[in-house]
Image (cartoon, rainbow over all chains, first blue to last red; front, side, top):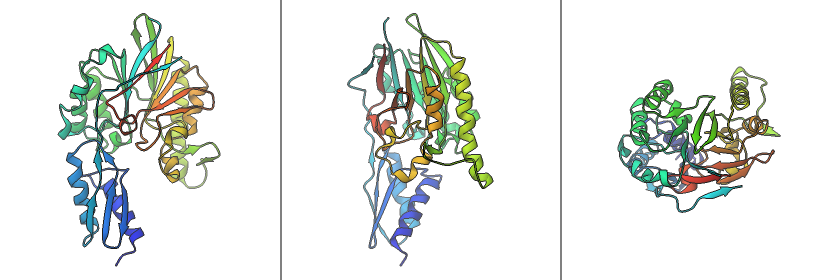
Length: 82
Length: 238
């Protein structure tokens, strides 16, 4: 079995470099054969493909996709810079 | 008019799946802002197709739109085509350059570009050693020099520096310390501090912090969409 440290690094690199994802800010945690993805993305279409790339990069591990989508709303307040 | 109202956002990362989904959040922006600044990472993969989605979402707004590209927008080597596409849609794209818009009788000058990394004073890379390291540091140094000229030549009542990369550490708090050199450079702040800049807008650091200051006292705002938690933030400069 690969050292968890290197598995996490390999998955993080794949999520950044794979043209299907190109997500640089995803955190990857490995505990035993469980792999956890955390972070935020701007669109829900990215969620499934991030889990897919992680699973392909770490075959045999169970991927838990805990990534969330940024909620975009209109701003509530403004800041006055005197 | 005694103040200029600036709407600002970065890291909108639009792609084909988001066509028509960002624009509704900009409805009514003219009631709250005089200009919209977009601080890079407009796309996810930097393709022209994604650039066309960005143009579709931002074109024909009732306020001027000024943007810079980010590192994602360079990934597919189509940055020049993306800039042309955005300019064709009436969006002003700064590429180490400046623009001036008239706002209620006042001139708002905006200078800037993508920026780059290298780290912060005392803990930064130097133009020393391998050619790759020298090229990395030189890229930022040359950008900062172009910004100095752009800011010096800018004739406006209020000046804003628009960047993708951060000029200060304060707005990176929340990001891992180990990646700070890839998130910004103090050389960008130094260029702004040499001019009379009223505000610096940047993005790139999704897990960072909204508010910071340059060593010279210029207000810095990280408007990466995950940081501000909205389609744009609003800043009024008196």
